[in-house]
Image 1 (cartoon, rainbow, N blue to C red):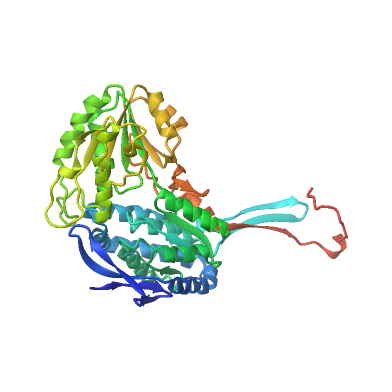
Image 2: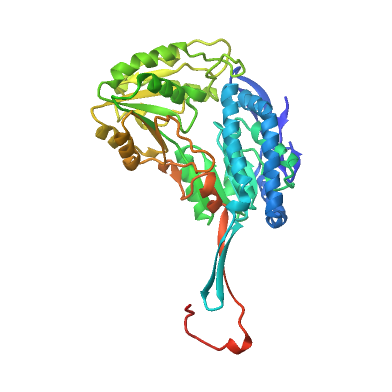
Length: 494
C-alpha cells in the first residue's frame, strides 16, 4: 500500500511515527497509507517555509506571475488526472471533481494578476516638498488548513493568493483525501515555484495545534465546521496571528409562490444533493411560501426517483458516496429522528440499497420540518433536504436571519421588487437570485456571516490580498540644509 508523503522544502518525506489509512469511499477499502506528522515534523515544515521566505519575498512580481501562468496551463492539461485523484479519495463524481478544479483555476487566474493586485497608492505634494505612498508587503509564513469536501479547490483558493503576495505556506489538507494537495504542490514546483515556498504536512490536532502555536506562523486560513473554526480563531488570534476561519452553514432557499416550478425543482435537487450534500454552500432548507410546497413536492420527488447514485468513476453516476462510514451513520441518524421531531419523511435515503461496502446513502426529503428540530438547526452535511412551510415572504426572511449560520442563501421568484428587497435585508454573506449555489467568481471573495465566519476577511479574491499583506505607508521629504530647523511641535502638513 503506497504511503502518501509530506512535502517539506521540496523533499518528499514518508517517515512517520504514526500512520492511518485513506479509503476509497465507493468501495470502503483502504487504498493508501498516510504519514501523520508529529509536532517536530510540522516544525520542520515551518522552518522550511521561514527559510524560503526572504528569497521569495524578494522575487520580482513578474517572475511570481509567471509561476501562476505556468500553473494554469499545467492544471488545465492535467485536470483529468487530478479529478481522478479527487474521486478516488473523496467519492464525488468525476464531472463534479472537474467542476471543482475549474473553480480553483479561477483563483490561479486571479493570482496571476498580482502586478495589478499589489499596487500601492501615492500622493505627491501632500505638504510642501512632502510625498506619501503606500506599499503592500507579505505577512510571512501562512498556515492553510483545508477541508475534505473540496480537496483541490480550497487549497487553490488559499495558497495561490498567499504565495502571490510573497508569503510562504504550510498546507495541512484533510487527512481523509490528502493526495490532491500533494499533486498540486508537485505542479507548483513544475511551474517554477522554489522549494520551501509551499510545504504540505498531513496530520490531525497535533499538527494543527503546532501551526496555531508557532511564533513563526503569522496568519492562519481555515475552512471546516463551526466548532473547530471558532476554536482555531480563538487560539490563533490569542497567539497574535491573523485568522480567517470559515465555519459551517445551513443554507436556506426561499421559494415564492410565483417561482417557476421546473427551474426551482431542478435547482433544489442540484443544490441539495450535488456532491452528496457535502458542500458548505449546499441548499439544506427549502423555505416554501404559501402553497408552493404542495405544487413543488411532486416535481422534487419525480426528480429524486430518477437520480443515479453510484461509483464516481461511472459516467452515469450523478452522486457518489459520503466521505466515510461515520459520515453515513451520522447523516442517516438525522433522517431516523426526523418524524419524532414533527417532520414528515417523504423520501427516506436509508431505504436505498447498494452493492458492496461503500459509504453510500440515498437522498432524503423531509417535509413539515420544525424550526426547533435538529434537522433544521444543525448542519447535516449530507443529501438531506428539509422543507419548512411559511405563510409569507416576511416570515421566511425572518427564519433565515434568525438562524445561527449565514453562509449563503437563495431566493426563487419572478418578481424583481421581491428580489431586490431580499438582497437588501437578508443576513448572509452570499446571496443568489434564482441561483441556488451562489459561490462568487474568482474576482470577488467567498465568505459568510454570523457563525459561518470567524475573523474579518473572506477567502480568495480581493479580500484575500488584504489578508495576506500588510500595508506600509512611507512619508518622504528631500529638504535642503538651509530649510532645516528644530521644531518640537507635533508635525503638521500645510
